[in-house]
Length: 400
Image 1 (spheres, rainbow, N blue to C red):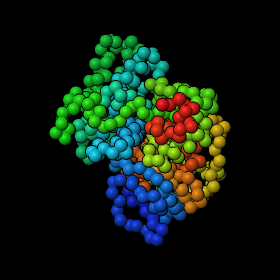
Image 2: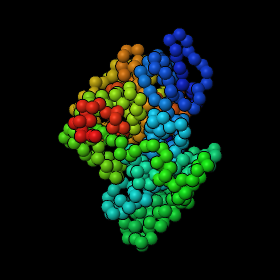
Image 3: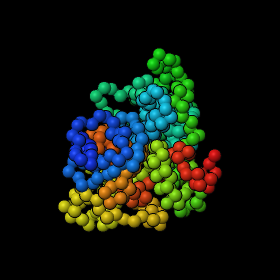
Image 4: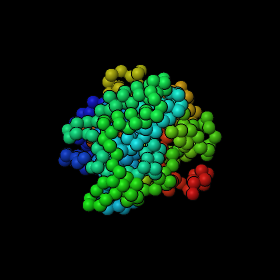
């Protein structure tokens, strides 16, 4: 996914009960929030969200100056799945292990495609599932990606170094038998060597045996999208740059996609959410993503500020509007996040609670609320457990 760097502000998320405002400092976890709780997006806001349901999550993390949102959101998703499955241990998994295992695969793909492929930090949810299935997993405590205490991740040098290397191979300036060693030595230097064995909480593991300990089956997770340039209920490769692995997604009509998401969240399943966050009405600092009926650029300054302070009338998004936005690049593959809950505002409009990976210092302690209109328009794809899909749709998709 693209790097999107935001200045994060230290404002505690505001909880509002039906009777009074709670001013206690929040812990590093925004959730769980009990159903029927009412919360808001920022201090002084008139948005009042009544929680329908949400899931337990691990603490918010910060991807720093990297394009590894896909890894952070996938790991957050897996950690919630471990909790949902009743595991006693609260596993803190390594995002950098996933990123580290994908880089050589991306390099191989780029070189075999003669440079006519994406190479960089970006990726998709299925990349993490592939790593889990084929390489295993390790705890954050074992593999930190060489992150030092008090620092944030910064992969700018790593990214440029690796890109120069693979470009050099394609140009014929590198000995083909040696480039893999150079890729791995660079990754070892910048991120650390991959452990073949390690001791965790007194027990010896390999990455694969540790993955088995998590109780997550990679085959249980499916990828779903909704674009009408492919047949409904078929599988297709989503034509986005970061889908370098060319993984397929199931294609369903928009209303059915939304029904899947609502069903999942109401039944306690999280969602991996890939979406466009380039809209000016996506405001992480204000903890809100909406899609006003009026064009944001046509509003005056006061009206623009009001969008994030009180509910506005939003665009009605159908399949054709969504498709047009994708076809003309208005909706792009910008960012991957972890959708953790569902709520409604005082006007009965549905919103989704989303856990981000830009640290926990925004107005919602690292989370934000995305309106139904925004999600209908800007969703690229989702990852979800197959059991979270309504039975009728599972039959259409031939999911066992």
